[in-house]
Every structure is written in C-alpha cells, then in structure tokens.
Image 1 (cartoon, helix red, strand yellow):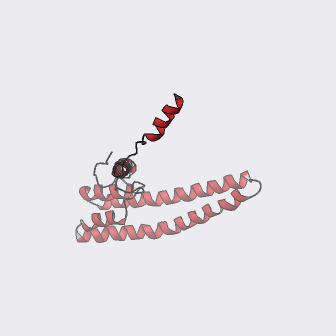
Image 2 (cartoon, one colour):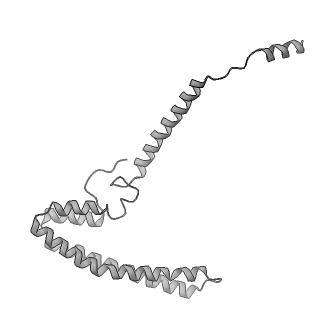
Image 3 (cartoon, rainbow, N blue to C red):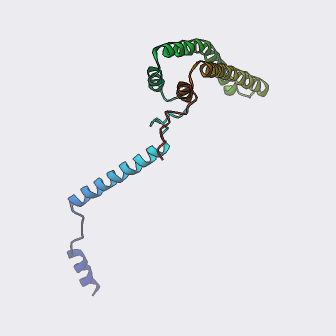
Amino acid sequence: MTDASDDVAQTQPRWRMPRWGWVLVFISLALNLLVVGSIIGMRFAGPGGGWHAGGGHEGRGGMRRVLRSLPQDQRKEVRALLREHRQKVRPLRRALREETRKLRPLLEAESLDQAAFTAQLDVIEKRRAGIQRELRSMVEDLAVKLPPDVRARVIARIIGRGTGRKRRR
C-alpha cells in the first residue's frame, strides 16, 4: 500500500507558480519598498526636504531668496554686514579646524595623555565660543538695522527657523 501511495505522489505534478505570478510578486514588493522608503524619507528629512537641511541653514539659495526680496538699499546694507562678519568668522573657523586636527595625534597615541587631551578640548571649546560670539554680534547688528518684517525673515533664516513652512511628518 505504501508503494502505491508513493507512485501516486510521484505522478502528481507539483504545483508551481506561473511566471506572471512571480512578476506580480516582484512588482508588489518593489511598490511596497517605494512607499515605505518614501514615508521614511519624509519622516527623517529636514525642513527643506534634505537630510542636512535642518542643521542651522537651509542652503545658500534660501538666504539669496530672502535678500532678493529686500529693497535695493536694504539688500546692500545686509550684504555688507554679512560680508563684514563673514570675514571675521572665517579665520575663527580656520583656527577651530586647526585645533580640532590637533586631537587626532593625541587620540592615536599609544597611551592617552589625559591632561593634554582635556586641555585641547578646552581650547576647542573656547574657539567655538569665539565663533558663537561673532555670530551673535552679527544677528544683533542685523536686528538693529532692519525693519521688523524684514528682520524676522532674515534672522529666522540665519538661526535656522526656515521659511515658516510646516515640516512634513
């Protein structure tokens, strides 16, 4: 009796999914991944739509748009002020990068010199504070020189509040 049942099992064809069925499964999987990826991308994207857009600035184009919307005399004044502060901030940032580079040899040494490491971190902290002071001075200067409606847009752009658009969630 077992021989007969084995013969029947071997003679019956196994069910296989047709080729078009596999194509449908593949298309369904691709669409699901597209939808899930889009949802995840929208969830984690910054306010401007990019991964790095929310880190304090929304790209140069955003500030240019704000500046273009200003009257010509205010635009020149704001650009001059930004240029002046940029020239003060550049050497401070350069010095910060140099001090930060000095950390690598300390970290790669066989034994960590904790005193030197801590001292270097203190120097980096002071450099960052210097940059922040200069940026604060820039924001204060802009706040004093601009009318309220323009002031709100320019300073919001600088401190990273964006364009006022709602963030997608």
